[in-house]
Amino acid sequence: MSIQIKYHNIIVPISKLDSLKKINNLSKFLKYCKEEKIKNVWHDDNLIIIGGVMSPHDVELLVNKLTALGLKLLTEDDNFDDICIIDFVNGPTRECPWLEYKLDPWNISYVWLRDKEIGNIIKIPTI
Image (cartoon, rainbow, N blue to C red; front, side, top):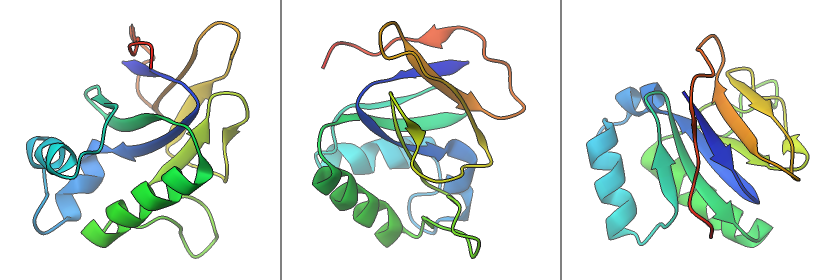
C-alpha cells in the first residue's frame, strides 16, 4: 500500500518501533500520538505518516518528540535513519534509502516502503 502526502510529512516505518522500549508497536504509538495531541497521523501496513505539517518549526518539534522516544533521525552518512522528512513538492529533504515516492503536487503525491508494492493509495482527508 501507499499513502498520500500533503505539505511537510514525517514518516516512520512501523518496523522501527520494535526497537523502542516503551512504545514498541503501532497501537502504543497511536496512543502516544493521541496523548501528545499529535494530529494528522495515518498509517498503512508498513508506514506511519504525520502529515500536513505546515511549518519547518512544527516539523522540528515533532521530530524532537520522536527522537526523545529513541528513534534516530540521521545515520553517520547524514541520510535519514528511522525518521524521514518529506514534502509533497520536492521529496525527502535528505537521502532516505527505505522510502519510495511519487511527487505530483497538482494531482496526488504519495509514498511507500521500498521493496513493497505500491498497491492502493490511502488518500488522506483534506486538512
